Length: 85
Picture 1 (tube, one colour):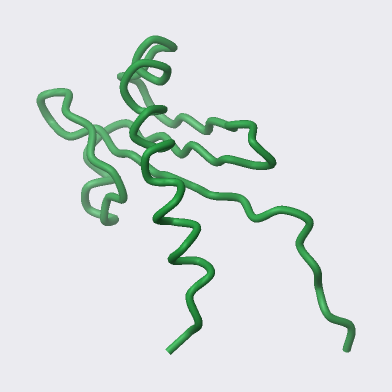
Picture 2: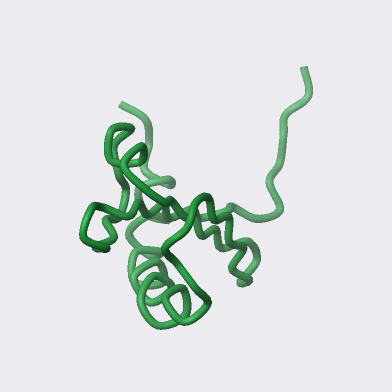
């Protein structure tokens, strides 16, 4: 079998909107079912957005969710690079 080599490692950050309009990072399945959800994924330095449901306009992505996703990128990268137990 041939090995697979990744040219880049996508770094995803998923958010879910709770009742009252607050967003949480890394929601559980129940939280995702309560309202809108958004996944932001950094691929080669560019952010891709997948948004399902309402509740988030461009300003919310740029001013609220994107800075949180950027702030988590280093920790997520280290987590993905850690050896499996």
